[in-house]
Length: 300
Image (cartoon, rainbow, N blue to C red; front, side):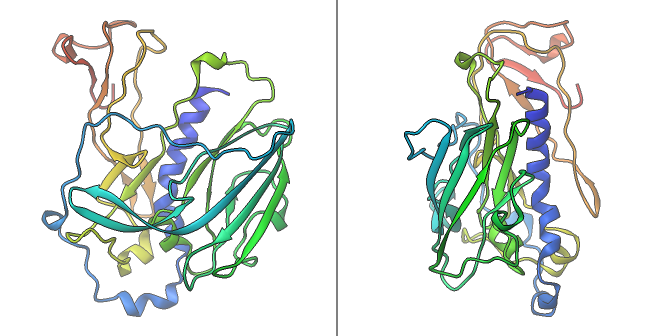
């Protein structure tokens, strides 16, 4: 798996939140016409700078080679994004675990809809699966119902994908309330040594009110796409990650996300922690911080 392809796919994952909001039932716009975007100064402060958390993996319940079998449930839960505030969310298995399989595997996911009063599906976004297994809006799972998604992963399908609900009229709300996960398909013969491992960065955005709840979408959201007030990495704001002292690149590239209102830029300083500098010397003297790592300025 190529890391550049991996990172590019993650960028698409983060941008998909605003894009997917377009699917929301526009017939309900009149009911949201008086909702205003909450003022920024009313939003809770999210903690920053904590160590990056690894995303949990969904356990394979099959001991047979070439088979991935697991259970997945969509259900209500709570998360604490801000100190002292519990935010109601929707989650897969309580943690939104990563599903990891390999090319050639037979995949069987037993799915349970635990969302009260709402149908849902599991859509395997971008994956080469049969139409009747792809969780489309015409094939919903009723509240309290279950079904099995079964498909094979063909050769050449290795890539990072994501999965999310796709029920008619409810896709946007179920996604922004938390239902989304990473599906990592690895090559059958992975050219990358296993000791290097993979660090998955899942980018999401969050809009949270002063009481910790997620505000409903406004008319502007329904028309143009919903954009949050905070950008999160693995559910955290501006986390830090310690990396091995090894030069793998000599420059950093900026990422821009877009929606129908044009490009939306989130300007953040990224910190790369290392014991020494390496590369082609592209960092200026003012940007070198031996005591706490390397600060990569935006656009460099």
